[in-house]
Image: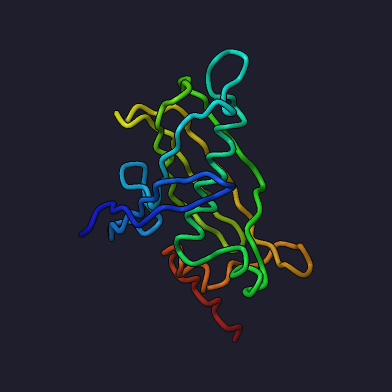
Length: 175
């Protein structure tokens, strides 16, 4: 069984992130203790609000950034989604703000997919200090849509496999 390993640097929206992928075989979707994927961010001047700490919008951006970086790390860039004919879109974000983050702090943004259905997944994210203290907990519902019709669509097997989701069971044939 292998733990997290650095797999490179990614540039997302002009920002550099350290990337880690958990290759733990216990739970392919990951857990809070063994997230499937993480990036490191630094709280920058533009993330600070009038109260002198990271603005709520910065946390939401990091939640989105780690999801996109995770997708790209498993080979699912936006161009690849276009080839597949569908893409994930956010249906719902829920964030619990537990602590403040200050300018210059480095934070780990850890994510995993604990639950998946036919056309949507639940993705959990924690933003933590290097000490392990949780600053923000988030849960996002991502719906998979057909790129042509923009309507919900079953998650293709190629996408399920990339994220380590179990294969969908075939429906029994009618007698």
